[in-house]
Image 1 (cartoon, rainbow, N blue to C red):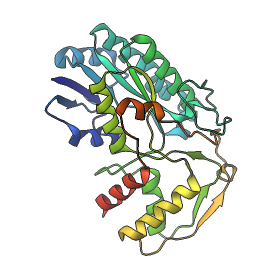
Image 2: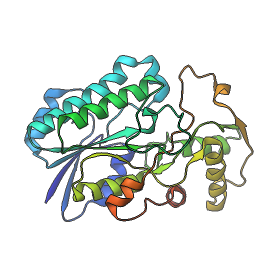
Image 3: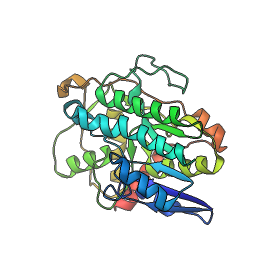
Image 4: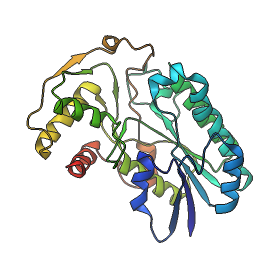
Length: 289
């Protein structure tokens, strides 16, 4: 029996993990109040009390723009805390699964990034996440980091994904604009959850890119969301999406323009293709309906 502690127990990815518990896996979900990754003493006590074989850390500070303003807070959650947690897990011979981001890359490659490509983050969020994943991998050869991108999925209370934002704007009749110069891979939370448990069972370690197939721009992603929402009966008609460049939004944060991750290592390890995000989108919209 594999006993798994899941941090960030109220979040999107933790919610996607909940229905996947199997006879060989016992999952314990702890919310931030029960397992605050910035509180070493609380983490140490919970690890001693639960004595898990594996910890899946879904907790993160992923309000990307606010990371530029709240640098100390975001660094403590995304960089310092994962390293501390990784060390505590290593002390007890517990395997840690942690999640990274495509924002560790600068977007200059213009072809899919593999796990061996050198990171070069452009912003504070990417730098913090890179420091976090490096600390996790340095703490123990057993630990596992899954880099992912544009995670979406259904959740009963959390409605902050790009899919939610596009549908909300369409329903309210607000003009829609989306960037043509930001390209990455949407990733269905339920798929990411499934791969996570497959990797926990398979016992690999190190770094994996864990994303669905098919890179897409924010502009095309928005159009596909609306097309599928019309098909699902969630909106009556797809409004026009205006294509714009990232500079239109006058963000103070630099974003990489191309961060498609290569998932072939993941597919080889799990023994099956990662699959398209389109199926996950349709499933999410059906749940929303």
